[in-house]
Image (cartoon, rainbow, N blue to C red):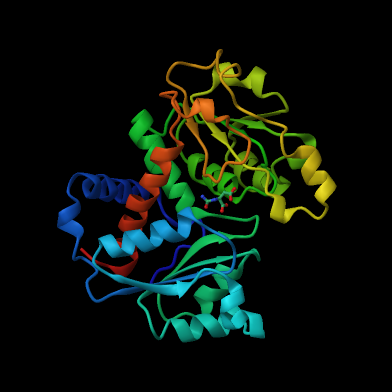
Length: 304
Ligand code: NCD
């Protein structure tokens, strides 16, 4: 039995295979419509979600399976004080696979130690979000045709943004990838990511505050939301929340084949006027998220 807690647990060959299956699902959805007949997915979400939970559920339904779970800890026994370990031990008796999101870093790892079935980390605090990264990778592959030789700008809350941490981990394994890390001083990438990934693998990266200066060089611009729920102090959030707003004026100097990604939800980081720009990929990214989660469920359940 295999779980997915951190994107680095998947080799690049395994990622290629997931992308191949997702692309095949996009072309031939009916081929997959009964692959998980009789199987159940539980979505245990201790934190808010729209895309991740609903795309997991849609993914399982489109594979012919069924779904149960909770969308908030308030209506689960967590509100009575039950531990994640006990909840997962019990739910894993009822289902074949579990996707779990939790505000505490490491909770899905703990869950995997107490589960009888595969666990998928659907986001743990400000730490990791491997299935968002799979959606990002499928989008990059479909837009760019490659993972090599890309200059990737990551902009916004690089400190608390778990999608950023996982995507850096995944992309740092390809050839000649450069990162431009764009954030205010207070929201810079954590030093453990620098030490354990960027420095360790000798990756070319720069840190800057200026989106305007960075934009002309980028092949991919990954915008992120300032993660309000992880702040200790509302004043800091209010001061930093609108640091970056991508609008038509700011992308004048961007490459014509730039791909603009955002894990969503967006607050103010991308003006709606950008949505009709052919470079905007964030709504493709959310749809890709469903297909790659279908591929992942098949893989973890060992379905051919
Ligand atoms: C992200 C998350 O939950 O980390 N959302 C998502 O899953 N698509 C990004 C965010 O909430 O800002």
